[in-house]
Length: 404
Image (cartoon, rainbow, N blue to C red; front, side, top):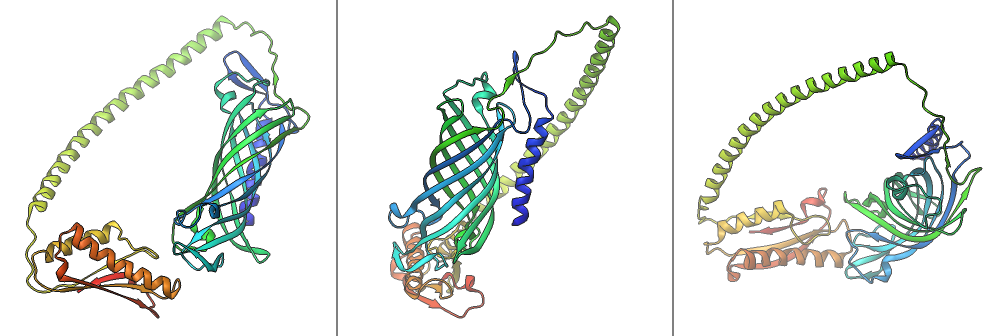
């Protein structure tokens, strides 16, 4: 991850250096500005506020336990009146809940079936800034309010026992509401979201979690020039008639080339439309076959059958694939007089015994409720029970409900 930090700082520096080679930046048809030297238009920012941690367990526990203080430290440079770059270090700690017993939870403190979680972190990232007011309206050094969205990438690190416990590559995006105080000082209201894998809180599931923050702070402009300066231009020199004729000929050649390309593109579009029509006909034929299959009646089953449906870790509801398997099973046994037992399972490799017993029972009750209420199976034909299984080399095969 050290390479990520070095690469981010190199990008920030190279963009700033490249911008210095540009002598002017056209913003509106009648106004241009000098970009300036490397030491011009730098700024320092600091902000404090609150942050929260959006994860799959965000609805668990008290609302207060999902919020914690936040701090931002930034340094950046405006390359033009509308575009800039910055590096920012943000962090402190994140609070929330987790159903898994990870290193960042308090195993003795639970609410709503989830553990309280608290971990320290830092987020070092480089951002691209776009001043919408300067981009789409006239640049004005006296404007009282500026709207500045930003995007960036960086390094998200989790701290534990005085060292780095985990780290991830993270994306950053947000909006800065900037209010002018004087020529050097601005007041900022910044809203920011970080997009990172759920592994940052010890959860092995492949999900995306979003730490988000709202901070207020100050920006101080530093450098030899704190604003951009207007350019002064001499009058356009007189062009010889021969040069005008040559330029017109070159333009006409470009127009002819574009017309030829347009004709070729129209031919390709016509061919594509014909191919699309054929594909639509194939789709219609396939749809007719699908409709015919849907109208076929499900054969009645006289012999007793069994089925297993599987759940995600920590979940008591089926995904679409396993729900479809359950629906097909219900159609097969709907007119049967056989007795069936529903057993919910949970593996003991993750979570506490009490939590797993509850989860196994919820899975069995969920399948029972779906069969009786959604698919119309006779309640007298079904019974439920639950079990917690340990020592399995494939715990995902134990997270199931079996009907037999």
